[in-house]
Figure 1 (spheres, rainbow, N blue to C red):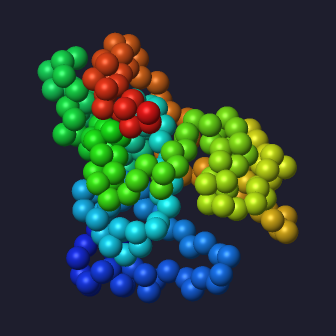
Figure 2 (figure 1 turned 135 degrees about the vertical axis):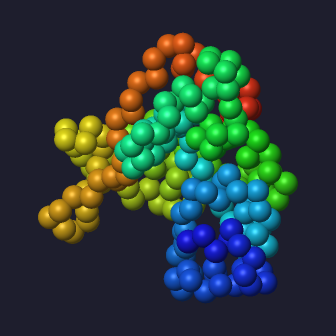
Length: 211
C-alpha cells in the first residue's frame, strides 16, 4: 500500500480504512520499503498514527546497491554497466543521485524520520543476520513489538536450492520461503576497485544512522 505517499485525503483516513480491524492485544503491520526513502512519508505516518513503531531492515549498502542493480538488469536487458551508473567519471565520485545509491544513504533518510519520531520508536534489523540467524533477529522484532517469542529456530529450515533459510508454514505440509524475493538471492560480486570506492563514498552517510 502506497497511499501515504499521496495527499488524496485529509489525515490519510483511506490508508487507515484499508487496514484490518484489530482487537485488543493484536498488532496491525504494514510493509512498504519506499516509505523510508520518501521525504513526505514520516510526517504523513505521524499524522495518521504518532505511536507507530517502525522496523527498518538494512543491509550492507554496497551489497544492497549491487543487488538492486542485478534485479533491474534481469528485467531490463541492455542496461548500462553498474560502474557507468554508479560513478560519475570512471572511478571518480559515486553518483548519489542514482536511485540505487540514493536509497543507501541511510543517515540522510533517518534524519528526516527523526524530525517526527524519537529513535526509541525504531528497530533496525540486519538483513545479513536475517539470513545467517533468522530466529535471533526475529526474536529482537518480537521483543520490540512487546510480543512473546513464538517464532524460534524450529520454525526455519535451510533451503539448499535457494541458499538461505525458509520459514515452515504452520499446520501445513508446504513450506514458505521467508526471503523469496529475487533481491534476496545471491548477489553478484562487485569486483575491486568498485566495492572499495563505493564503501569509501557511502560510509559516512550510512554508518551514523546506526549509532
